[in-house]
Image 1 (tube, rainbow, N blue to C red):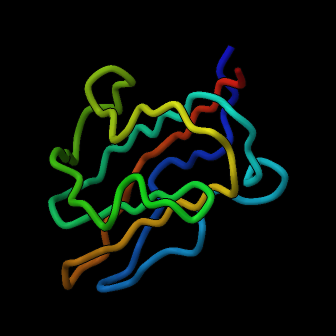
Image 2 (tube, one colour):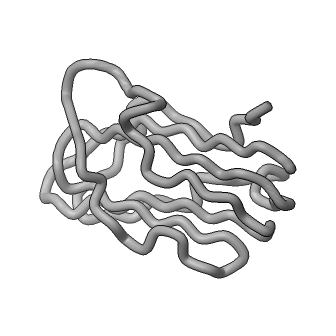
Length: 112
């Protein structure tokens, strides 16, 4: 059963800013399991970085879909779905535009 280890609705990121680590607290330290990141930004220009144990799984990649209306879909808006060996999880969003963007995201972890 999946555990939500990070999430936010309409997380606002100012122009040209990179967020702090979005996976915090005790959920940051993961064992072996499946990690799934879902994201839905309000407009084009949001990049994502994810690493586990210092290994980049997604390295400043553009999120290829966006929308100012509608809702995030856990089947259509998958950024990564990966089995990991464990380690410290770090997730960052970076706004590459000259205006503020919002992003809905959720991070699921299923221990194995």
